[in-house]
Amino acid sequence: MKENAVQGKATLSSIIGWGFGMVVFAVGVANLFLVHPVPGIVYLFLSLLYLPPVNVLIKERTGFYIPTIVKIILGIIIIQFTLGVSDLGDMIDDFFID
Image (cartoon, helix red, strand yellow):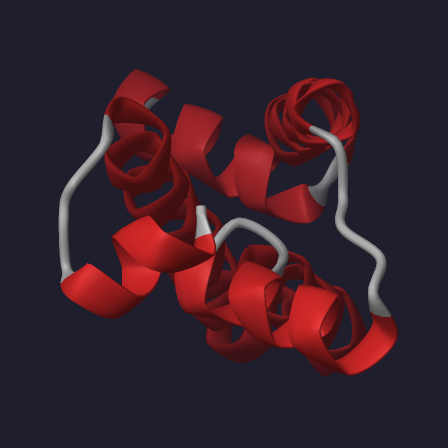
């Protein structure tokens, strides 16, 4: 993974990581301005876990990496929380229903 990030080669996992990381980042920004700063900041920090350069940095600094299955489970939890529990999900529903 480090070699791919350094050489700039795009793999499916890095493309998915960038895509989902940007989506979670956008949800964080929306929460930051529309709902409350605390969940917005949490989403912003969680979005970093999906970005390939951050994964490389974490592995270089700590020698620890986050397994893909953990990222998938965390992603499912983020999606469920965003759409089911958070106020942002209610705001989206109100926007499209009313």
